[in-house]
Length: 364
Image (cartoon, rainbow, N blue to C red; front, side, top):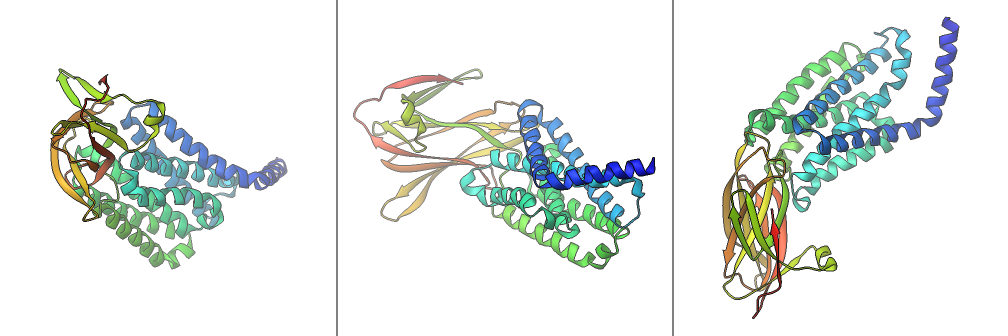
């Protein structure tokens, strides 16, 4: 019987080794796709619970590999050891994908692209350089990055707040967890024990970089996200219904990212946004209007108009601001929270017109 299992193991290992280069990226991609489908079909709270379960599984799988390789676990679990890297790839794909989706939808790409770029590079390099990422120090460093990213998403949901202290708390909790985790791993693997200081240097470096990205407002204001934004000639509110008048556009005009509004001198321009926020979260949204001065070759701040947001609506909390006497030229509006973290940005041109353009009614 023992010989039978040994023979089967060798056969499966041979097949696994032959197709490993395809299995590893496939499981990473499947993890990402599972996350994406989950995000769009179930409640956000359940999604966070699933991400937390993935996080626990990842930590357990990494610990299992290290304990097995240190011969601290029965060799009878060799099948589990063989496929453990695939499990880690799947959960890494789900966790990195979850972070990417959250941060992508919660901030303007033009502002938060460095952080989104980091997550994307980690996803790609985790596959391309998978043999390096199987090394304990790199694997643990990636796991720490995922941990602080995940904690900084979960804590605002738990405390119904966007306070900067919650991000600091996420970092502190991550450090405590990994201090215990690395010490736990060092009991299994003498090499980890010998390199323990390098592990701590790595995670503290990641912590410093994450705080720099956060306090320079590159990390977007999780868990807020901009669901919709648009410019209109008029907005009237009746109960929960917003009736808006927008310039008629053909198919090709809709594809142009920078819109042009044709207004009479002194007319009012309305800016509408729908902001998603989790239940019980109350915060302030700022519409920062800026005008590009051709002479100074710089953006000039014109108005900062704010309104309160009460979370809980899946389609987003509606709000708008308006401005009159807009000079002809290039404008942009940043959608920010009180700390100045950017959820989105819209850029547009103002052209003076002698007649009212053709308008269409839109109801939200």
